[in-house]
Image 1 (cartoon, rainbow, N blue to C red):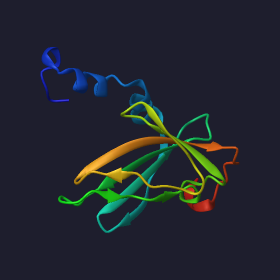
Image 2 (cartoon, rainbow, N blue to C red):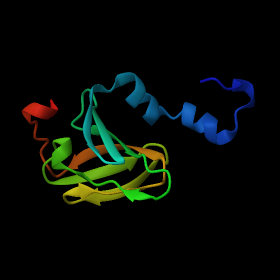
Image 3 (tube, rainbow, N blue to C red):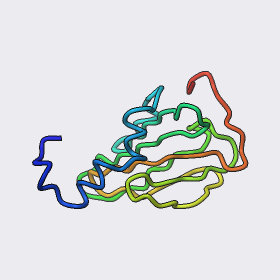
Image 4 (cartoon, helix red, strand yellow):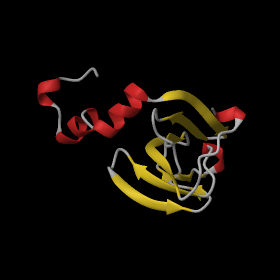
Length: 127
């Protein structure tokens, strides 16, 4: 952080002190790229002691918003996924087979994905 800490605006302060985001930064493991499809990129990480995954999605296009679709199976989850938006601290809901948020141009989002009535299914390429 290269800013003046005493004079941070409230949104920057919330971002830097967001406990859910700090867990991703300080405790996630097995961080890996899931895919790079043109201007769309997704990264995942494991949450120690949980069956959850951290998911970061990026839209590198500088002009247009993009729907960045990630399937539950790409994250190693079979069945439904429950998603938590870590920056907004909101729950977008439960998704059957894929989660496809719209990401602003040159934007990114950070989520925590949990199996919902599904069993976490580890594959050799994602554990």
